[in-house]
Length: 231
Image (tube, rainbow, N blue to C red):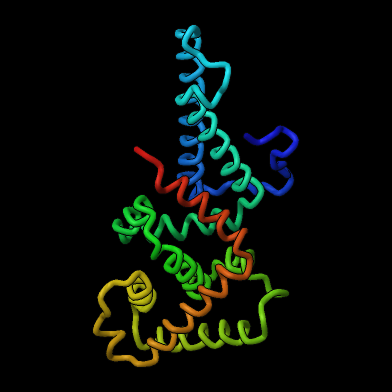
C-alpha cells in the first residue's frame, strides 16, 4: 500500500478549464471515483457488522483489501489525469471517438487485446496529422527528443496525406479503418500512394510509444480504467 508521503502531488495551476466536449469523459472518471469510494465504505460497514470475524491483518479481509487496492489505483488514475489534463483529454477523446465509430474497438479494450498496443499510437498519429490534435503527440514525442528523421517523416507524411485527400474525399475514415485492421477498401487498393502513408503512420506510431514508454503506459492505464470499467 502506498505511504502518504509517496502519493503523487496535484499541481492545481496546471488544470485547464474543461470544455463541454470533455464533460462526458470527466463524468465517467467521476463515476469511477464514486464507485471506488462506495466499495471501500461498504467493505468498512461489513467489517463493522461482523467485527468478530475481522482479522487484524488487513490482507486477510479479502473484500476490504480488494476495495482499498482498487481505491488506490483509482486515486493514481485521477492524479495522472489532473496532472496531464489537456494531452490526456485529447488522448481519451481520440479513443472515445473511434470507439463510437467502431464499437468492436471498445470490446477489444475490455478484453485487453494485445493489438491495441499497436493500434492506439497509430490512431494518435493519424489524429495529429488530420485533425491537428498534435498536443498529445508532442507530449509523448516532444520536438527536442524527435530525431531529424522523425521530423522529416512526420512532415512528409502530412504533405502526402493532404495531397492524397484531394483525390479521396473520405481518406481519414479509410485510413482509420485500415489502421484498425479492417478489410482494405477499393479506394486504398486503387491508390498505391496510400500504402506509403499507412507505413509511415505505423512507423511514427512505434516511435511515439517508444520515446517515453513509462509516460505512454500511464496514459494507457487511464484509458483502460475508463473504457474497460465494469458496467
